[in-house]
Length: 539
Image (cartoon, rainbow, N blue to C red):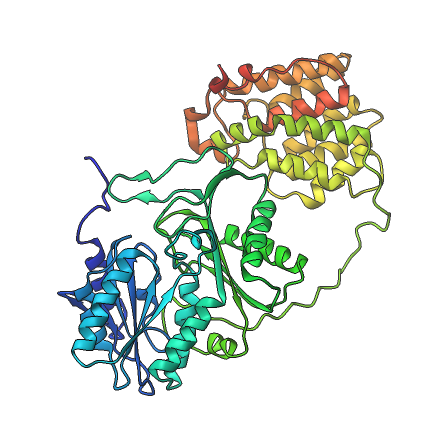
């Protein structure tokens, strides 16, 4: 088979019919031409509201049908404008005594087809007006105005509420134009969307790069750039949005998942955006986060800011009965929880040169540790090791005690607590080499593991044996390294790598390698650790 299983020409019409079936009668679908219409719109409406565009942006627009939202939607093929006949027939079906309002995103195909439909409606004697959404900051200087992107969600929410309140056609057009003018958006992609016909990404990014200023059809942005952190990326986006906005008015913030982010990642973006806006003195009237205007499965997000003009807020907060529009509420800052216990009253100590050396060593090996853990786990081992070291810096005690507390109290998962036990036992011993045996015993007891199970114990137990036999620090490190290398020949008997069977062969256990780095730091030796001995991908 070639191409994609999702390349069928009937996919959009099939989805429309399925949506109508699942709506319990609240939505009906016309198949020739294709459009969807809400059957339960408010009787108070004097004007119908119609939108549409290429498919692939779900839940926009079909998910916005119903009271408080749209009356009809004309869906085109994926990333392609609907035909003017679809729009025309959808608008005829949705028109009220006061006419029909068309909400159009600023793309050439959409503009032409909606404009032709509007002329046909006028020819039929139906009053019609258009609101053009063109708020994308990155494309505003392209000569034809900015693209219409996620601000469409807010514009349609405002217009739906106003139409339910009985607003007339001219009033709605003015309101929609004002909402568009008050909106500014910018989007980024960490990975392009999948092309349905080929199952391949639309474009390829270098590791660590993002496409800055993307459109919702997967259009490339204004540049490809390397990104050091989420905070740095979001800060730049906020800077560009506020520069376009030209002020720091109270704002509504919309964080829009372009299709491929997890909810956890979307929440992280939202937190970073709030921090960046707050740091620039911007007051937030409301924050919305979720998947509303997508680009198929693009792994990326967009930020939209809307000036929170007094007329907009009641309309944004008004209830609706659609499947896909956000439920928008005023932002209420939660009261900070009072701590129920104090871990330490000591002031944070200054970072020691020892922790500096350890952190530098782990940073250097971080990409390799991450790759090893991706083979057998979820790829977070390097992150957890760094997190524990950095958490240790906030404590004022010996390095080993700091590390024990940092890992035990502040690092989750499996590796964090186990390394916390290691440092706890080493700190309690007369010297770190004599504590290796008790550390191995404690970790084996907790993890129900032993030598040969492909865990950090495969490095720790040989190291403890070398110390007990009277070997010096260098011999201890060499024994741990030999044990870590041996894990390249072991299938796992513990942890999630058990499910991978022989697929882990040729790759060392990340925990065992991390232990070697810790012992090398403790010993202060120059025992060489070669990546080629620990991963067949380096061979």
